[in-house]
Amino acid sequence: MVNNINNSNTSTSSYSYLQYKNKITGLASGMDIDSLMEKLMKAESAQMEKLQQQKQKYEWKRDAYREVNTSLSAFEKGIFDNYGLSKNWAAKNVTSTSTAISATANSNAAGNLTITEATVATAGQKVSSGATLADLGFSATNGTFTYKIDGQEKSIAYSKTDTFDSLAKKLNATGDFEVTVTNGSNGASINTKLVKDIEATGNNATFLNKLGLTDGKATTGPGNQLVSGKLAFTESTTMSELGLTDGGEFTIKAINEQGKYTEKTIKYSATDKISDVMSRINGSGVGVTALAANGKLSLSANSTGTGAEGSIKISADGNKLFEKLGLADATGKVAEGTNGSMVVNGVKMESTSNKYNVSGYTINVTNNISATDASAKITSTTETKTIVDKVKEFVSTYNGLIEDLNKRVSQKKNLSYQPLTDAQKAELKDDEIKKWEDKAKEGLLKSDATLNKVLSDMRSTLSNYGSGSEDMLAKIGITTSKRWTDNGKLELDEDKLTKALEEDPNIVSRIFVGDKENNREGIVASLRTTAQNAVKDIEKTAGKASSAEDSYTLGKNLKDVNTKIDDWKDRLKSIEERYWKQFAAMESAIQKANSQSSIFMQ
Image (cartoon, rainbow, N blue to C red):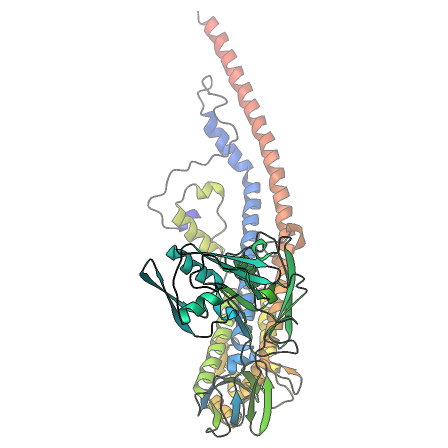
């Protein structure tokens, strides 16, 4: 039968039925013992080869069932993702007359909205730079300190926002000053000394006075100009440099998108830098963005709005770290955002975010609208063509599954092609084996009762849907084909669907997703249940990749046939050994006879 495959380049078989070869030479008898043994064992192996072919059929059938289950699982998951959610049918064209308002609409959006006032919600934020010149009484935003030394004039530019550290660097860079900055329990102190006598008058002398130098020509100043409650720091400053030699912990909470608080506790050690603490806040998931750069610190809430304790709140801070860093007040409050509001169709609404859900619309406020500004008008229209195309896509998906199942149960078996034995495979090339097996696999599920039940259940699910209500598939133009060759495929009347949408824009969403008001599930949910039940039924017969062999019908069959094959292998080994012994005895007898004959001939 293997010759049914066209093969002009058939290779010589290298397959052997023998477990032992060349055990007996056949010199005495002149017979090709190995050739005789091959023929004998081939005949003896016929029954085992039939079992191996049966095993192959079981494996092919199991795999064919599993392919069906893969298709059914992909179908039920796909129709849920693409057709089973309200957003899948939210084909609305939404317009807004104001750039301050943007909007989208779901399938249930109805009516027009007019927004006469709107206020944007803001996120809380606090920025601190620690001790600065402003804390020493410098009020001018920018200035220049000019002085003379040995008759030479020098100048230093400064700003009231300069930190103690940045000022110290500027003064020390001249070589004329010796400035140190230290942190204590009450805050930072700056100690300034003159290395050389200098001369400064007018506002320049005032600059020196604010640094603690009372005489423009003095060589030392009193130092230790304390700034109560504020520390001097950079992002690299360690906790121990802030006076926190034992480390500590704190609890931080922040407003989230739902208008509630998320709370986390964070620990730190004496060797941790400020930047390390900020990084832990960022990684905690509390909903705060913490920055430490250029001598400044910033805490910003990731969500807009505020609550009873502000947008960000620090508590359980025994070392008062955040109060000393200038990020929190004595109560622990860091920042307070603002809630948003809008007046829509005369009704005032308030939210911690800038997103509102109103009558099927999702509205985003991006800018304020005052009572004197032009109102924002929101309208929507159904994109009928988009929905029609989506329904066509569903029909095509369903028909693809039905076509595949029908092909499997109607394909005829090709009885001329049985699974190849190992000996037959040895005579063929790989591509010839594939062609043969493709033929042999045809009709594996011909008239299969399980698959026929799946097809019947699918048809029943569709035909029974909406019974007793107006939301039947036929109302939107979906019907079962009357051609018997289509075997239950669907047809779509696009004109009827378009008309239904014009009369009732939400009808497709109700049919596919469900009607909550009438407590009726959608056609997608019904089909998913049918497909999921089919998968479970098929798994009873074919299992799945992770199934134990004895947990499903075909697995039990495979286990049984494998046992029989193993028994036959042991039996064939004994048979072969018996044949070898018989041939050995024959060779010995002939050799003995030949020896006696040669004696008489002498």
